[in-house]
Image (cartoon, rainbow, N blue to C red; front, side, top):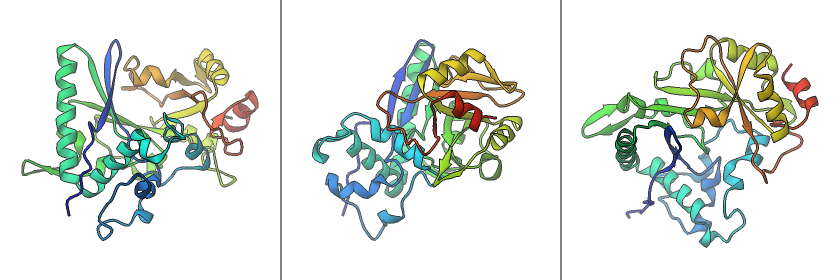
Amino acid sequence: MQYNYNTTNLLSKKINETTIVGTLYLAAQKNIMHAPMYGIEHDKNALNLNKVNLCKNATNGCVTACIYHNGLFQNSHFSKNKIKQARIKRTFKFLLQKEQFFEQLIKEINALKRKAKKENLKLHIQLNKTSDILWEKENFIYKDVEYKNIMEYFDDVKFFDYTKYNILKSRKKTPKNYTLIYSRAGLHKGKLVDSWEDLQNYLKNKINIAIVCTNKIKEELLNQKEHNDFSIIDAQEFEKGNISLDNCIEGTILIHEAKIGTNINKNSAFVLETPEDIEKYLY
């Protein structure tokens, strides 16, 4: 039986004054398990949904605050939730129709490259907006040629992602055109995942880190410009292509603002909300 997991596109597109950003949204964490509720079928012999987790290192806080749960139509009826349906279909395409997935991805990135060239813009691609896949290890065959990863195929395109994997241990060797940023985790099941000592270790090894804050704390940190001698920047400015992280002597701290309406798990310390949080987790 043939399953149709086609969607209008794989990548969402945002354009600002300097950069086109192509972003891939997949089914976050274990949300592919909800596929039957959306009327999306699959070959049960080919894939056990209970074993699929696209964010294996997700913590209590990031699960609660994840953009997937705070997007449009959060509470709408399954049959009307087109956004989540599309994310689940893309995920099935990636897991079960890999060749077609990469063929479509290549087609879309090429189209974005042409548009960027025509309009004299930079192009950035983020594949893990709602996932944490090791894209540097996702090999594929395209037109009878095997590629180690999509970055090898598009060696002239900049890719970036946030990750909760220990970059120093498991993701240190990545393509030169793939920027990985460690996403601070906070607490998980009551235990601190990454102390300030851990975060400093990343920064001293030229690995950038991302921290999520409320608007007030974000403004306070950005006004400092530095924290413990490490540079601080607005993550949005990096994602828009206005700030480069290349050729830095040490890692940089990227500050994200928790979106309005974000479900903040008060016991997770994932979103820093007060000066006391800064003292407790960033010193």
